[in-house]
Image (cartoon, rainbow, N blue to C red):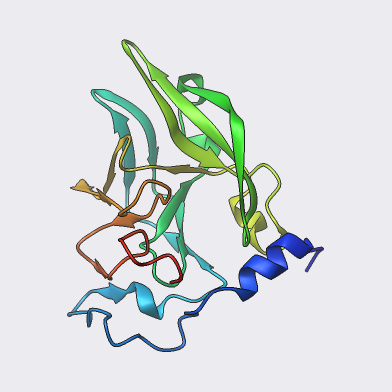
Length: 184
């Protein structure tokens, strides 16, 4: 394990829930479902062989069976697609960045297809913190801004404006991003 900056250590220690037990307000998962309250903090990366597709209108910008899901307490999975499965000619890097206490500094990407530009449609980590090296260069997509699907099943966007989790029928919450969830 490599160097973890002090800002990241402080932020990591602030979380109330860490996946050890479900809070009383958590939805109990049914058969074939996962509770986001069983996901760990720090987040775990899991391979996923389902087919991921990402589109802007009629234009497919990503397709993969080699994605990974980042599973973090209280959040629906964030899906990361390897760069080889993304149509890079449709992407333009934006100037802004943000920091995640687990993964490090994120860079944002606009997607440009004929007749349309979607700002901040995706993000990636060029130099993730050591435990998240596996997602270096992978792309995550905001399902609130582009159409995302798992095995042709449309994804619903995680609540709130900041998070990019993929809500599917096999995941139950409630999810971080809803009003009152800031400390989750």
